[in-house]
Every structure is written in structure tokens, then in C-alpha cells.
Length: 66
Image (cartoon, rainbow, N blue to C red; front, side):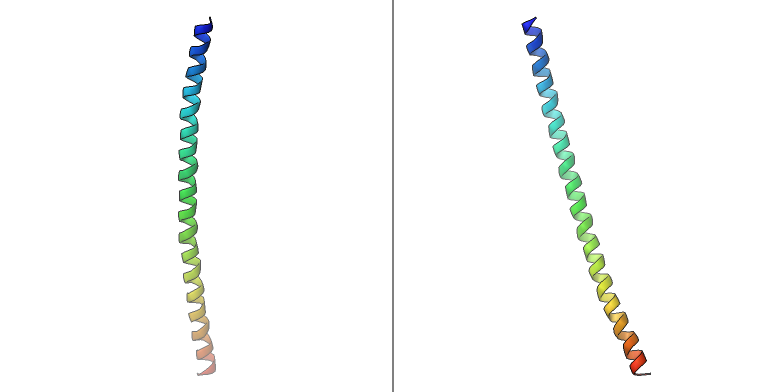
């Protein structure tokens, strides 16, 4: 009986170790994807701001110098 119980415990320890590794891997991959998305999104916002600045300059130039 004691031997059977210890086998069960070792089996649970193995599976919990594997599941924790898998969850850790998922956490890292999700974090990587989020950071990648954030970086590209920031670049797009930055480009959008620059485009908006140029557009405002063109509009003001057109209004001031018809």
C-alpha cells in the first residue's frame, strides 16, 4: 500500500512539473507576443504623429500662402 502511494506521488510530481513548465512556456510566449505587438503599435502611432504633423504643416502653408 505504501509503495503504491509513493508511486502515485512521484507520478503527480512529474506531471505537475511538466504542466508548470508548459504554463511557464505559454507565459513567456504570450509576453513575447504582447511586447512585439506593443513595439509595432508604438511605431505605427509614432509614424501617425509624424504624418499628422506634416499634414498640419501642409494645410497651414496652403492657408497662409494661397
